[in-house]
Image (cartoon, rainbow, N blue to C red; front, side):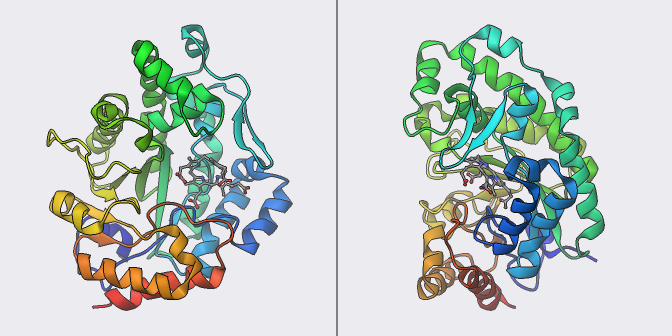
Length: 345
Ligand code: CP3
């Protein structure tokens, strides 16, 4: 049986435009909160394949999306490279000992050795392959090297990125050394996710817009394209989704965009602009502003406008970034059913 989501990634004809939501497995679902409480905390949940598989599947049953995204976090990668990850209540992810110099980078585990430590992720994928309905796709993912590096250098989320940017402008070789090391781990990590059973992979560059346009290619996009090329050389039929948040308008003006299938459009970019610029070459994913989910009427209006623009051609419905924890579940269900309603052929 074919998977409608995979078909849409490859621009094949589908009965309607498939839909999923970034961060769809999470705190807005009471069922998620229950399993997280049983696991003790978020990281225990990531480390427990049975429970991680359970929360991965929840939004399929509850909200009706067409694809499941592996339940994990982008920050398990630096954690397994040897940086100690903690989630502190109210503060989000913390690395207490961030990277300051070359010796700190050299001390980290790299390449396949680091990727091999993420066995619980591959175990979760294998369980999901047995549990998912045949027509639903499983999305594996990684953070882009730049987005991962922001946490590794700042030690936490940041509004200003001053430590990263100080490094970018005063010691770019050091930043490239971090990005190179992370890239090599991510290449193996992606291949191992695919070999465990991921049908599609997405690269999240959530903090792309922190980089000025003239430097984006050098410090982020180039590494993302290298990862995509590496995956495509080994698994040409596995669709790749690139999500560089906030930079769709100017990305890679040189014209060499890269070897991937789907471009994730963030909510700040008009879909018509993304379509004009990228729609011929890539399937577009997105891009409702996630806060529209607070109102069913506003959700319907937005879904209709996106459908009007995309006409069900080379499109996957999604939000333009992750769903927030206080969105009513019924509004998420409404979004998904509206996407299917307006695009039904
Ligand atoms: O449903 C899914 O999307 C799958 C699981 C997933 C999580 N994180 C679970 C999670 C995915 C794909 C991510 C990616 C991720 N993690 C990104 C990139 C995507 C994006 O939203 O831009 C980033 C930047 C992170 C880093 C991260 N993880 C932060 C900043 C936080 C704290 C903020 C927050 O939302 O709580 C996390 C924690 C996290 N990752 C939670 C979940 C469900 C919340 C943990 C909890 O309290 O249960």
